[in-house]
Image (tube, rainbow over all chains, first blue to last red; front, side):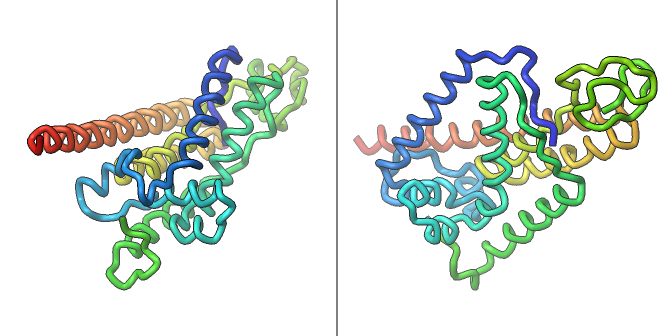
Length: 138
Length: 109
């Protein structure tokens, strides 16, 4: 996969993003989205009342920061599929900026992306069915 | 990557073209597929509008492989465009509901 390749790695901006990310992590660690109204609601859910494929991710990340991996996966199963891609993209972006050399690019072929699309839409439909018991709701 | 001089397809990371000897740039000018952005908007804010972004992201690398650089750039542009449309749409809806909440809070006072 080709990540955006910054023409001039800017350490100042990257440091700012890093600090923003760490701050967000601290807030997410301290305040549970399941009981706190501090966090923005999902626009798709607000509009339609249905769950989107990412609904539950904020609560899942809170659980993950507390080491509750099973709880996190129950809240947002798609994290299993998506977090390796987003995680590597984040790491390689910062590695490029601070190390000067890019990490090896992820090779995600067309088949894998179409697979991701099918799994996403399938999960999206399934989790909105009444009988989908592990749907996190809220 | 493709040689900037003769267009021959070289192994990723090669320092010189295997066909004409042209020195290849260390950071190849790649066509970004915006897959990461497409996934982010699909899962973090805007569901349906993110789907076209993923579809276009899927087209970029196969088109590059067949040498269709212009097609790849076009798909890349569309993937970026749909990522922004999805982001903007999600932001508007979120702001709308924040606004509704504030009106509700004021009305309750």
